[in-house]
Length: 256
Image (cartoon, rainbow, N blue to C red; front, side, top):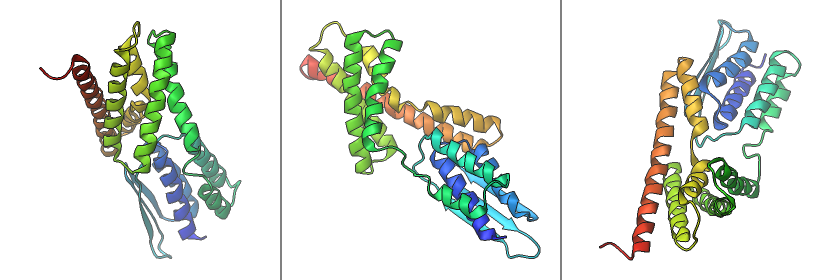
């Protein structure tokens, strides 16, 4: 048994799942199943919000330990599904270890092109507008704000802007643009447009995963996710509020 390859496979699977936004307990469960195929006395995986630690030990071998730092996580349910499928087939004996490692390595960290992400960012606000009671004017303006949001996010990621700063700036720009355009367009509910436009930024999945981690007893990772979601929501609120205030000042002709 190639113990090093087993632990590399487990860590790679865990890294891909964390990068895709999987819950901590789910990552640990997947890694432990892979590690147990080594049939050693000790096979443990410890997963945090930003890192992975795995070890294999047996009386007749030298302990094998691997640690991996994980940054810039997002949400990709399809990638989580692919990792789960590969790990289950390997653990069931339907796939050799080397093939499982190679197939995990072949899973792309970025599944779609930037244009597809931008198109989705444009469509999401337009889709939320009617859910909030918006009519065609609100839908069209929300789609336009979605295009602006996609542009800001693309530029921000290209410049490696911090996620919190990017969310704050994005909500600021969108809110200010909605107010400035709304001043020239009559009959448009600006509240609906602003809420719809910032929906792609709302950390809904992060909050859900945080609650699930806490319920599973992973308090450290759960609290870290809660804090991350809270900071993201706070940044969005601060940016949107500042954008509306500054746009209102501009429309009113300056501070008096």
